[in-house]
Picture (spheres, rainbow, N blue to C red):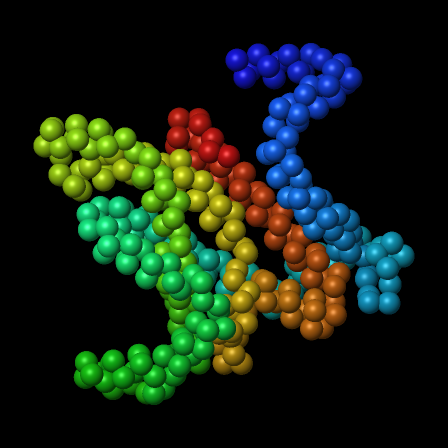
Length: 319
C-alpha cells in the first residue's frame, strides 16, 4: 500500500505533488509542527555553515571575510600531508578509538544482558542507576578524579602497596600508558549509558520465545545466544556502523582534561590538534581543511561499514 502511494506521488505533476504535501501536512499537523523547530535548527546550524567549508581552500584570516579571502586551492591539504604532528595526532586518534571500540562496543551489550536477566526489580534498578551515573558527570569532574587516582600517592598506588607491589609512579605522566587510560576511562563513563538502547530492544522480545526454549531444555546461556542476541542484531549493527564511522572523532573534552606536557606525544588527537592550531594559533584555513578531510573519511567509513553489515544481515540495511 505504501509503495503504491509512493509510485502514485512520483507520477504526479509538481502542482499535484504540492497538493499531496499540504494534504499530508494537514492530516499530521501536530507532528509536523513539532518537527519544524528541529528543521529550522538544522538549517541554521548545520546547512548554512557548510558555506564556511570554502575556508579550507582559502588563505583566511580574522581580518578577511569568507568571500574576499584569497583562494589557494589545495595548498592547505598539501601542508597537512607533510605535517608530522598532524599524522602523530592521527595515529593517536586511531589507536585510542580502536581500544574504545574493542572494549566499549561489546561491554554495553554484556552489561545490558546481565541487567535484563536480573529478576529482583529493586536490585535491577539500582544497578542501572549506578551504571548510568558516570555519563552525567563532566570530564572536568572525572578528569580530576583520574588525575588524583593515578598520581604517585593516589588510590591506584595505594592499592598496589596493599598487594605488596611497591610503586610510586604517576601514571598520568607515563606516555606509554595514556592510550589505555583514555580508552578505559571513556568506556567506564559511557558503558552504562550505552545499555539503554539494548535494554529497550530486549524489553520488546516476545516472552514466548524464551518459554519455548525452556521447554526444549535450553539454559540461560543458550537462550541469550540463540534468542536475545539475534533479536538485537539490528540495533547492534546500527551501533557498530556509528562507532566505526566515528573512529576519527575523538573526545576533545577528555583530551583537554587529561593531556599534559609529558603525555602530549601520545595524547594529542585530531580534535585537540585542530583546536590548538585553529583557535589558539589562528590558522582557521588549516583547521577547516583538517576537519573537512576527517568528515570525508568518516562518511566513507560509514558507507563501507553499512555495506559490510548489510551483507552480514542478508542484504538488509539498518540505515
